[in-house]
Length: 135
Image 1: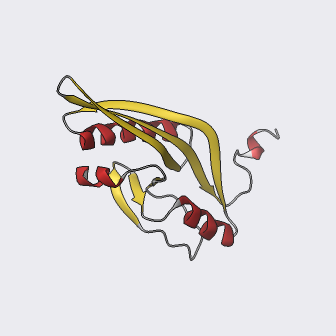
Image 2: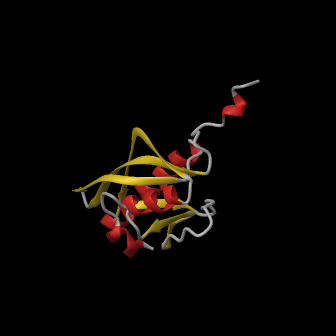
Image 3: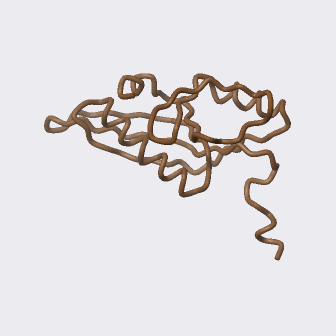
């Protein structure tokens, strides 16, 4: 898993395991951190395939950011990604896209700061469950 951290760069998309996808949509994924998989396709390709199937690929404007320390750059990035995954899960979203990665070497440790935007794949055109608000 750690070797895959080298593949993480701005534009990389991670999708939560078990996320429902429209029939016929195939996305190449590979496990990365617990409960999350790295997507081999670009966000543009994913959006195109999901939209063509009649589903929606939401983009949330708020930028998320997490930092972590590790004995190597890869370990620091993976730790920051785990923190971002928890943030996205708390928002009940199923995808996030990396927008920036910065690393530094500090006192024998590596620090990684990773920024991302939450995204969400859903059949409904409504990001939030409108039935909760119509009572």
